[in-house]
Length: 230
Image (cartoon, rainbow, N blue to C red):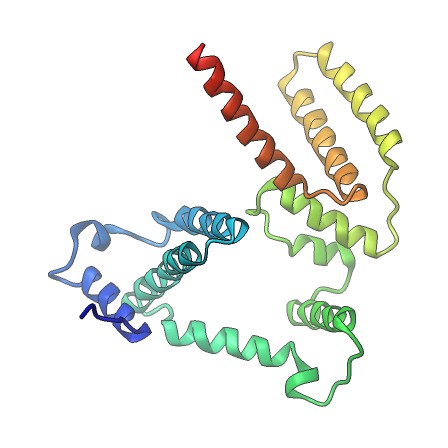
């Protein structure tokens, strides 16, 4: 009969892989050397979720969990932190940010829950302004996703973005500037503006810019495959 492993089994497996008689590759890894694996495994889980593939969800969730445990094992070896610290930190956070469940705060709906969560989060981080809140959005997020989050925070606090028609004209004008300019610094500036403007248009039309670009990239791959086979 095939063995069913537990969470503690997984901790022991990773510890053994990193141990003296473990795997040479696993033993060589550091926080820095495997940090990008977190991104890759996260997106592979998202793919499984989009495909509604339950066995794949379990498999990819395991790969993502492994990254957390692997880093915790490295942390344990260097006396930085352990998996117990990870579990304690997230448990404390969940209890602290759900006072309507674990405390005496009353809420009417999920909107109030989110408002409370965000306010507690800002208080915990010492963020006094909306700009502070924006700076708290990780700079390591995919750029389109980060732009969308920043724009959402701005919109919820009274900032009014251009209507799609105005944005379209603005994008056209910036593309015209690019066509007449070979300066890389200028090009980077205007391409950034164009992409930010397009994220704003996507939000107005209730389209996720990250998803839209990803799907179009898939279409391009399919078109290229046809071109390659011609």
